Each structure stands twice: as C-alpha cells, then as structure tokens.
Image (cartoon, rainbow over all chains, first blue to last red; front, side, top):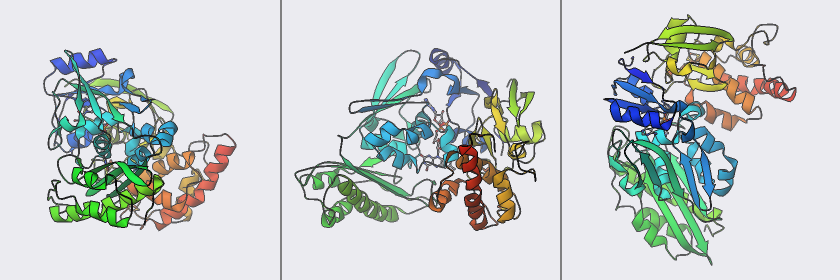
Amino acid sequence: MKAAAFDYHRPANRAEALDMAGSLDNAKFLAGGQSLVAMLNMRYAIVDHLIDLNHVSDLAGIEMTGDRLRLGAMTRQRAVKDDTALAARAPIFAAALDYVGHFQTRNRGTVGGSLGHMDPSAELMALATLMDAEVEVQSKARTRTLSIADYPMAYMTPAIEMDEMITGVTFALPAEGHGWGFHEHAQRHGDFAVCGVAALMELAGGTVSRTAITVFGIGMAPQRARAAEDLLAGQTPGDDLYRAAGDALDDLDYTTDAMASAAYRRRLAGVLTRRALADAATRAGGDRR
Amino acid sequence: MTTKSISLTVNGKTVEQEVEPRTHLADFLRHGIGLTGTHLGCEHGVCGACTVLVDGQAVRSCLMLAVQADGAEVVTVEGLAPETGGDDGLSPIQAAFREFHGLQCGYCTPGFLTSLTQLLMENPDIGEEDLRKELSGNLCRCTGYAGIVRAALAAAQAYKEAAASGMGGSR
Ligand SMILES: Cc1cc2nc3c(=O)[nH]c(=O)nc-3n(C[C@@H](O)[C@H](O)[C@H](O)COP(=O)(O)OP(=O)(O)OC[C@H]3O[C@@H](n4cnc5c(N)ncnc54)[C@H](O)[C@@H]3O)c2cc1C
Ligand code: FES
Ligand code: FES
C-alpha cells in the first residue's frame, strides 16, 4: 500500500524541530523510519506532517561517564551495536542489539525511535527497564526526565505529549565485572520476540549480591521480575536456584495474541530466565552447577 | 501537500526531480527514473527485496522517503557492476550468484545482492553461521538459501582481495 499524503519538514536544529512540533497539527517526528514509514505505507498511521530529525545534528551520540551511559535519541542502532568501548564495559548492549531487526534496519533505526515506537518486544526498552533508565524529553516550553517505570502509558504509547521530543536516554550501568544474559525466542532471527529475558548478576564471595531480571515481549512493556530478583539475593548460584527463579514469575502480566498464548509466554519466560541467569552467573565468574 | 525538489546521485549519475513527500525511495527509483531492478515485496520492511545502498549502507528503500535521499549517493542493483566489474560485466557477488545458482525467479535477488555487497565489503571473513544470521532480513521463496549462502562464501574471497588492494570500488 501507499502512504496517505503529508507535508515533509526538515528542521536544521533542535529549536526549529521543537517549534514545528509545537505548532503543526497531527505531526510526527521521523527518526529511522523503520517502524513509522511501514505504518504510513500500511495506513496504520496517517499524519499531516512529518518532522524529519535526521538533519538535527546534536541528537546523536554515545557518552559513557562512570556508571552512566547516555545514548542520544538519533544514535543509530548500528552505532550502539558496534561501539567498542561500550562492548568492553557492558557487552549486553551489542548482544541485545543483534536481535533488533536486521543489519539493514539497524543502519537507519535509532534509539529514540525504538523508545518512541514502544513495541512490547523492543530490546532497547528491555535494556532501559533492566538498567533503570531515565528518558529525557523536551518541548518548546520545558525539559523533563521520566523514569522508565513511568514511561509506558498504554500499548505502544509512551507517556509523552505530542509536542515533546525524546532527546536521549541514560542507563545506570552495572558495576564492572558483572555477569549478564540475554535470550529471546522469535519465529526467525530478527523478528519481534514472543518472549525475551535480560538478566544481570553480581557476585560477592560466591553468592549473589545483586541481580536484575527483565522479561519482555509478554505484555504492554518490559517488566522487572521483582519476586525472582528477591529470591536470588544472597543465594549461591546453581541450576536449582535458576529453576526456582524461573518458577517465580507469576507476578508478571502475560498477554495472549495471534502469535502466542499467555500460558506459552509464561512457560517461555521460565525457560529463558533459567538460561539468562546461568549465562550471567558464568560471566560473573560464578558456579553454574 | 507540497512537492519537494530533490537532487541525488543514482549509480553515479546526478538526478533531479520533484517528488511528493509520501513517495518512498523504491517507488521513486522504479517510477520516477525507471530503474525497475529494485523490487517491492511487502512495502513494510519485512522481505528485503527493495534493499539498495544509500551512502554505502544497505537500507530498505520502501522505508525511506525519496525526499530523505536528497543529497545522497544511491546504488541500486543496476549499479553494482559499473566499469569496475569483471569482463562479464558482473560484480563478484553477481558472478557467484550465477555460478552457484543463487537465484531462481530472481524476485528477491536485487535485495540479496545489495545487502551482500555491504556485508562482504565490511566483513569478507564472515563464516556460514553468521552469514545466515545476517541474511535473515532477506526472504527468498525459491532457492532454500543454500545456493545464496554458497555464492556469498565463494565471493567473499574477491571482496577480501579488493579490500587488501585498497580498491574499495569493486562493488
Ligand atoms: C523487519 C523489521 C524487523 C524489526 N524487528 C525489530 C525487533 O526485533 N526489535 C525491535 O526493537 N525493533 C524491531 N524493528 C523496529 C526497529 O527497526 C525500528 O528502528 C524502531 O522500532 C523505530 O525506530 P526508528 O528510528 O526507525 O523510528 P521511526 O520509525 O522513525 O519512529 C517510530 C516512532 O517513534 C517516534 N519518534 C521517533 N523519534 C522520536 C523522538 N526523538 N522523539 C519522539 N518521538 C520519536 C515516531 O514519531 C514514531 O511514532 C523491526 C523493524 C523491521 C522493519
Ligand atoms: S519491499 Fe521493502 S522490505 Fe519488503
Ligand atoms: S529466487 Fe525467487 S524469491 Fe528468491
């Protein structure tokens, strides 16, 4: 199908883009276009104006300072996946990005677009939830920061206004030497996951000193598995423990859709959690019996 | 809706035209300038048939607007083997597709060839497992992929030599 007609705007800087967002009716920002242009072609989305952010220069960039990582909204998914400093400090980013579509879509797709689109299976949303990220948004009138817990509002709808632009997202990186695991199940590599799990683990004296587990693709937005995280605290890593954690995921919301039932997603969540924790423990130098 | 005038390079030639903002790059290439080698399978990013190179990067031309290609350097399947191609007028990956039966009906082929051009130029040492993963964004209904994978692995050597001799131009 073909998109319905719209006007196209190419702001040269952030102020111009925000002016447009504040004054044009039924307008949307265009980032990598890897979700939006598909929606326009299918007429799932019909807009009067597109504001192309690809020529706004100060929106892209990867900054690491201590345990904070900031990704500018227009940073290409490819750039995040290929960043060698980030791969050394937090390899889970490259591992997760490898599942985001295909290399051709990552050439154009952006970090901000992924958060703006908010697909339930979006790996970048999962990482943001795993690492207590903060999303920066800006309109002509104000700048504000949303914690990732407050960011999802409804299915594929973030809690931001029409005139607000996502400018960047800041992740709280786990300490050096942490272990990580990332597993997902999709029909084909690069497809949207039916269920995925991202996990972090830190060990001290042979026991779990900190974990974070995020299950995604199962509901409106990624969810932290708090009961499983609590269960792991202070325990000695091992297969029985991972199994117990995988069994402790009933506090999450699972949806049924054309791809899978809630019960199947619940089952996958358990299996993928066990695998992700086993990987995380191994990478943290723990015992994986 | 206001049309925009764009100026870009397609396969080395400068093209200037007025386009509707909603026209995606694939329709512009096919209908605007008659380059029908770029195929459309799905128009929502899933099949990869429409892949072209924009500033050297493989992108889905159904997900990029023609207005966004203003100022860009676009290479389509028609431009993969310019003067730098071999005696047969084919680029290494094109010649390998012929030799290893990398195509049957040919509908998906332009997308595979452009995608593999970026992939092999950047990573000529890629192994079969990674290659299959990277090709997950291109669908073929005919071949079962075996010939495509064999062709890509065979052509990799040529891209390696091109990279070693510093002539990145051997598309
Ligand atoms: C075949 C295929 C497979 C895919 N598989 C996956 C996958 O497995 N996992 C995954 O996560 N994604 C996947 N995607 C989608 C991913 O490629 C997109 O890049 C991403 O969802 C959107 O990012 P974008 O930069 O392309 O944004 P766009 O498509 O340009 O925009 C998406 C939305 O975000 C809004 N937006 C963009 N930037 C901003 C901003 N700065 N401020 C406010 N709003 C903004 C837009 O208005 C729009 O509503 C896939 C896409 C395709 C085509
Ligand atoms: S036509 Fe563009 S990806 Fe299918
Ligand atoms: S050769 Fe027919 S679709 Fe690939």
